[in-house]
Length: 329
Image (cartoon, rainbow, N blue to C red; front, side, top):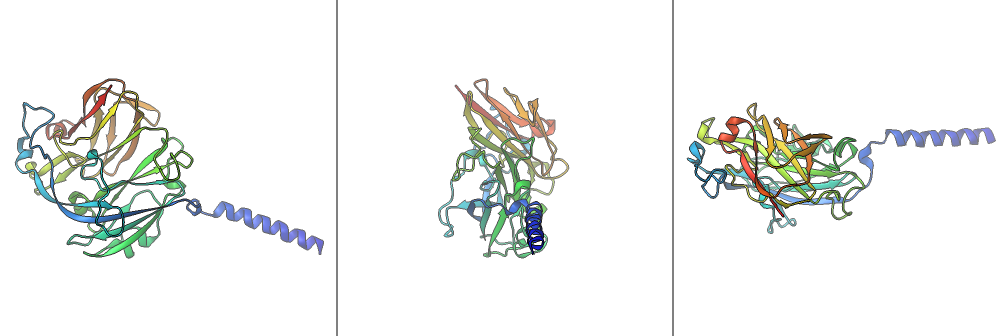
């Protein structure tokens, strides 16, 4: 009898230990973070000043012939009434609201389609069940006009920073009913995941080892069936320096999250004047991006100035894929 008891105890211990090894990392408990996001049809102006703010003596060229177009955007709200928008930083431009989580958290996105076409929200990187993929079948893959759906995404270990990553990394989300059309319409946003134990607090999931984070989307929006005048070479949906808000000061610890989307022409070389960055242990001042790239780099500004921030591909510079980032004393 004693031998049987010992055998049963050993079996139970082995079974428990085995379960510890096979349980997926997304089973860990964390905070539930809720977001209310609507897709909306808007008029978007690629250069609200109607000026070339990079070279004031210049102009907008063919890309300034038409500046305002009908676009679709993700807009964040404070609650399920969808009446009070969540403020966006100026530099966010056309980007949808940034979602944030710490490894172990669950993200719940209450999505309302306020447009005239079926849409969805498809995330990169995070863990989800088939219905919450926002693409390729499942309940959340095709939300009709006026429809609602709550997506549940989990920031498991595989969604968080890897061993050689900084304390936070970025993922894209976008509509995926007719993905190529909808990304070109402007239905794009990002998800920032902070490594467990490195957030400022349970309520504030931003990483505590940086003072500011910026996000930059490099993409060419095609507005006129490949006509040059309609190829808008943008950073966050703006051209020729018309994106404000990249402002900081000497000594600040900055993290830039860089993403790209588009076609084979969306090969970008992101360059900062006046500063170098640290990218996964490599020191540089140019970062290479291809469509659907997502990367994070860190910097500490060392010189005061009103600096250029642009794609270094010649054609893209000429077409206005430029902004400025400002460093104050």
